[in-house]
Image (tube, rainbow, N blue to C red):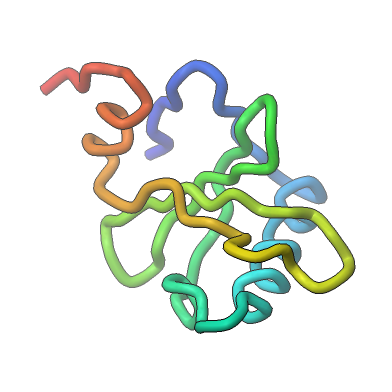
Length: 103
């Protein structure tokens, strides 16, 4: 079952998802000077934010979602990028996004 996304998030599929998935998998291991907090965690891109390079991902091994701000550069990543903007459950994501979850 696909969950509804808050306003501003655009579900991605097909080739667009593949491009974003590749970018995510490329950027996470390049973080310096320390490993990225999500490096090594199996993630799947679900959606993109309408006005920047943030993606909503789901964790394969749990019920968690993460919002990661990508950089979309081909050179060495800028300091502190990619950044994790949020990690939590779907309900926490809705609250973080400014949407009151309905229970």
